[in-house]
Image (cartoon, rainbow, N blue to C red; front, side, top):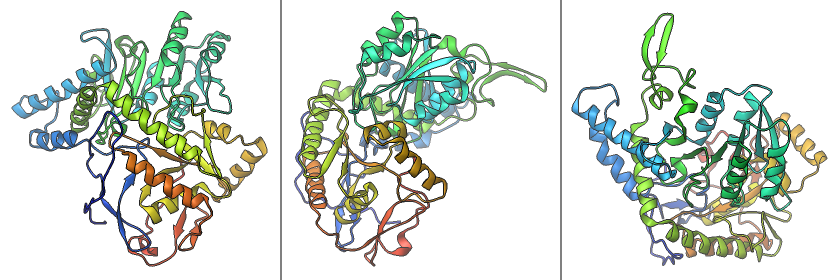
Length: 474
């Protein structure tokens, strides 16, 4: 385990609207030249570090931790109050009215929330849900288990229109649900979600919005019937998420998870389930995660969406325009005139995405994501791959060889990302794309597809290479 020392003598220029440091910002990481550099985290679209207020709240709560909902002791009552306050904050964050018809179910993350909803909607195998090719795997795979899917296609720039969605909604049979992302985790593109929800409702089709990528950056769509998001993407990385939707969906039938806490009465051959939302939260809940998520919600709403949007827009413009100007680099997704979240995904001519990501880490101390970003169908379309190319790499993977798996590099910014961070990325990418040779040889692991620098620099020796899975899997 490397030591977590911080030394940051450089000047950092912040974008408009926000000036904040997260827990772990500027931790020193080793590079292959033997130097330690402040880590530049440009992987916020995957997970975010904790806000200082979140970390403080979790630490302050630990002495008061206790089991919730089923203890008469003072600490249990205290923990139960904190847990229920998190639920109330989540409802407000999702634009729901206190005491209304919606409930907030506390889950681990968005993936669990979607699996939960797919089970509880009691879909028939012949039912149809409409979704899009832009989706994260979490909003594709759970539905495939329980019903048929009808897809809204996208253009080569990774976008679709309200009219494209309407075509899927108007086809027969009428979809039972529209399941759609609020923001792409690959390109940062923001579908016109309010207009899409309105179009679905005009046709009597309820809407689920995957808010995982949207929640840290924009207000969630209050008119969506269901919405889910994750704490680990909004500065509360303590294993909690939320599923919000109508109480009526969860009132009848058995819950997604069966166990203690979800029942009023159990006999050896009988069970009486309790009322939602407790009905949907079997087992001992993640109270610390709920506390963390509530504080993150309070912090984001405290900054205000205007300030967050100004920060995001400034970084998105700098990031995407800067990358688009690099010779030999192709920016994926919509054009520069389209507003996106501060996310940019790109490829460099003649260079493996895995090698570029490895060099950014080992030589510059910059953390990005590479691969397909848990959105394989979307990325295949952005890369404009033929069926033959896709079949070829699929055959390789089935043989255990991941060296040829296509992919891209993604840089994504968060609340604490600075103009200085983006400048550093642009300089590094420009140098790599120019053909500048790497200072050491990199070897590729056939099983994972990842590259590793050869040498004996601390942190980068053969014995330091302990990860057992591909960074590009998803």
